[in-house]
Length: 81
Image 1: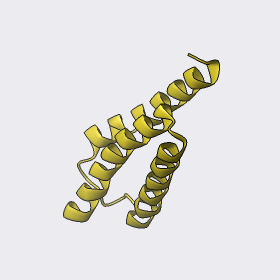
Image 2 (image 1 turned 60 degrees about the vertical axis):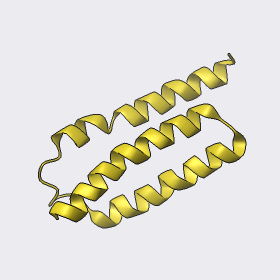
Image 3 (image 1 turned 135 degrees about the vertical axis):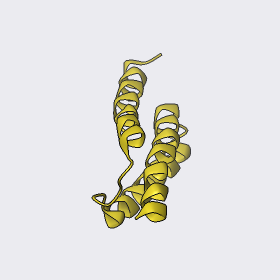
């Protein structure tokens, strides 16, 4: 495995795991910006498409997981305001 791929996996893991505490803690979504999460989710989708286009597993895996975690927060925001 190339060093750049290892760095990619470390970066992907770090940024993806950072959402887990927020997903667990999010009970009150009133202070979360719906606009910010909307823009952020578009960015995650674009990163996912980019990773697929490059066939880069670290980018693909990280963005699938991040999309699920941040998507959970986004849905909670919509449902619970």
